[in-house]
Amino acid sequence: MGRYILERIIWMILILITAAFVIFTLMYLVPGDPAKSLLGPDASYKVLEIKRHELGIDRPYIVQLGDFLYKTFIRFDLGTSWKFGTPIIEDVAERLPRTLTIGLSALVLSAFLGTVLGIFAAINKGKWQDSTTMVLAMVLISVPDFWVALMFILLFSATLGWLPAYGIGSVAHYIQPIICSSLMGIAINARQGRSAMLETIRAEFIVTARAKGQRENIIVRKHMLPNALMPIITGVAGGLTMTIAGSPIMETVFSIPGIGQYMLVGINSLDAPIVRACVMFFALFTTVVILIMDLCYAFLDPRIKAQYSSRKR
Amino acid sequence: MLNVKSENQLKSSLFVDFLGSLMKSASTKIGVVLLVFIVLACFVGPLLSPYEKNGIDLTNMYAKPSADHLFGCDAMGRDILTRLLYGGQYSLILGLITAVVSSSFSILIGCIAGYFGGMTETLIMRFMDVWSALPAMLLAIMVSAVMGAGFFATIFALTVGGIAAGVRMTRGQVLAERKKEYIEAAESINCSKLSIMFRHLLPNVVQPMIIIATMNIGATIMMAAGLSYIGLGIQPPTPEWGAMLADGKAYIRLYPHMITFPGIAIALTVLAVNLIGDGLRDALDPKLRD
Image (cartoon, rainbow over all chains, first blue to last red; front, top):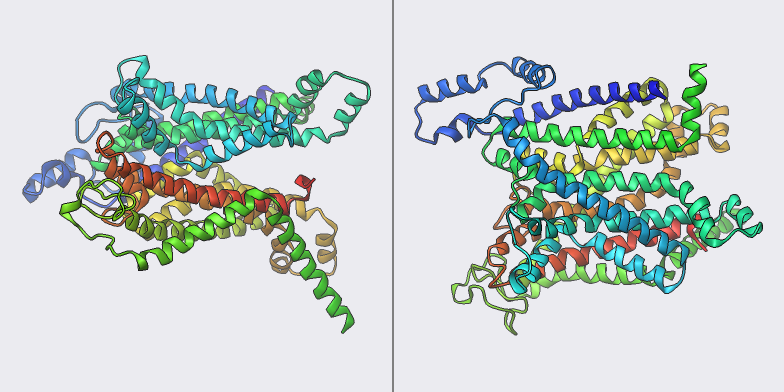
């Protein structure tokens, strides 16, 4: 098992390095002159030259790439923002907790509510509880979450005045973003959970359990759920990365100074170090989620476990 | 002669059977009717509208919905309904092209990976691992930043985002198919690898991919709206739904009609496509049929 984990972690680092290469190259290709956007259109050629040298963007591509990879992976230095001149790591440290608070709370909410709804629909298959849940899930999947967020602001902030519409500061500020970020996940998990449970319903071991007179409650909890767990975990992990990847939009709607919004600030002001740092964090986050998911699989699926323990012997 | 005829009959009855089971569910019917209505409205509606998509009318700034302007007007007095219908053309075409292009690429790459196996497969799949370390939406945001605004840049950005997941899915399908007897039979009579891939494997893995592509149309329309909302993707004054939402956000307290209708338009379109996608899945997957 230890070997499996080690292999996965090494692979994760390789993925991150390759992703860093892709991110660097994409931002290198963004059209526009950062020096010009910093100094304004009136700056003289000489001044622009000096600024470009200062930013290090007059060096050849391969040198810049090497510098970026070296700083990111060996010295864990994300560089300084071209526009603000501040170390990016400080801004990220300030903003990351906000994005993670929303993402992880939405994860808990959507994993729990979604799975419960899915199981509820599956054990009532064909009845009105099932169809109601599935219609609800269908609607939630189809409605854009950032528009629901706007409607929430309209209802709870503008009309009723119960919750603050934007910004941060109190717990109340996070209620709407968390709920809106979790809606899509709830729907996906409910659909995934239902079909995973239904896959097991026809399995022979369920027939056996029923035949020996096992109580329905125990059949669901002890026989069906463990077997349906893997697709459910896949759904939960997918929902989490989607929430985090959607954070630039959600944070724009609620004006939350998080990582997603920081990335857009970087894109709009041609501040490549900011964008690279933010996307690196997103990539790190995604790969860690995938790693955790794989490890869950390995623990849950005796086949993967057996593969590695037999190799050891 | 007789054989040919009966084969044709069999084929058509299979297709009729498929259509029958597709249209059996009420939700698919709703989806089809809704989508036909939306497509007709978006492509015929603008011809009937008395307003221009960018016709500025300063006497009607922020006009609330009325008999003249059913959905009201925006900050420049442009008729929101007319703009929504034009915007729908962009969203529908964009969703369709993106889904077709990205699933064609995923099917091709996935088939190659799944069928050839070995080093080719390892390389492709490792590459896809890297690709999916950057979630679709982020990749789309970065690619739009590189490509700049515009219709085709947006299509490219959204296509790039969707390929990795599709490749995995196709490869899974191919791996399940290639163990079957008909592939073994084709190999034993010395069919070329290309012919096995395209003439034998492809038709059998294409079905599940159609379902995924249909579902992707909905997701793509939503992502395109999201991109425009944050100022990337298709830009104003083009009446894109997400851009219209972004325009209206500033007036959310005073003129909520400016953000209500574009959102409903996105939601109904995505809903229609998703309902059809669900129906296709149920009709094509006999396991789910009861």
